[in-house]
Length: 491
Image (cartoon, rainbow, N blue to C red):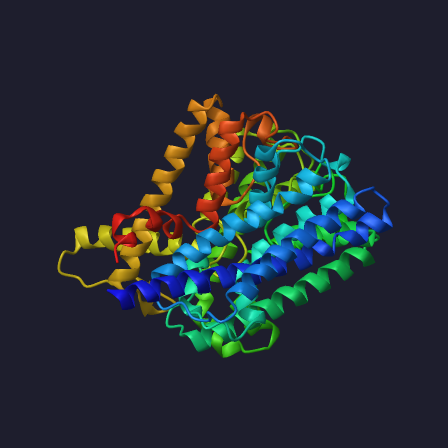
């Protein structure tokens, strides 16, 4: 019994050490926000520097106090660590919003911080353009490192953590294509993914600058679109950009929804290995094409848009929805109603597993559809053996069961979210849109919270519900829900 107690104490100390490392990373990134504070002279220099120093001090203190604890022996602690990590990051991410005077409400600051680190894109600020430059960069930066995954970022940069990397990887990135990975392969996968992520970030900043965009806007918009976040330094999101710039951002959205391991194979010309992911990417591109065509036709024939505007706005907004980026090119709440609700359904679907997008992921949707097809075929031919296949390989019954459970939990969470928001005074239409937007990471909802709107009019309880949905959606529900099972806390 004493040995078990000692192991538990050691696990907690190692957990706090890891939180210290993460906070030091967050403080370092926060410190970069002094650059726009100086350049634009927005009056927040010492305040933003103080926020960074406080975060670094707390993180450094935790790391130093428990520097000798290097191993978490209990795999269950990985789930607790990841959940505590996101809560801790969000807590310290509120400091720039509060101490720079951007808001005096902790609820608003928490909502914005949680939306940033979970790369959701829902905003509680009605006039984003009025925020100080340092805060605008901080909003964008939270989405950039949150979209990749802060746990994955540290795993890539810190090779000797003494923690089960595969457990952490699956706890944060449960939607990733991680079949058959070990701790060693996890490290390789994470580093390759980070390399692709950094390469795309730099490439698209350069492309946007070549299109005539200022470096400030190019950095902010690249950070938020490559991470499937959707924050913008402008209150009208991306609507005021040139058509060329909008199409460059659309390319970012499309790539952000692709499995990053697949992008690595494409960049390194490893064509033979791509066939193992062909089903998922084909289904993803088919959904993009068919959904875009539906929205474009609706805009032209039902909403009176010219073909040029219909193709541009319909395609880009569809990509934004499917990849759960949340960038807005037009007030889609005024579009043809079936097209509006299709955008919500695309947000639920999400992009490919192993991408920065949220939602259920197209791989799970594809498995569910093929399983349904197999069940129907079995009704006609009871003696036939027709296993569900993905990329030509049979899918295990265990994986199919997991997919069905995730669908069930996701659906139940969505319905409970709608009910909770309605109890918080939100009307039914906005409650549905907000629940989908926050749980999937899409961001914008319906009504006043959709299009160019914001969540500023939501009550404090409603904002806390939305913040909870963001966290559940980012960790795909299961990592958080498992903490509330009685068996999790039994020795």
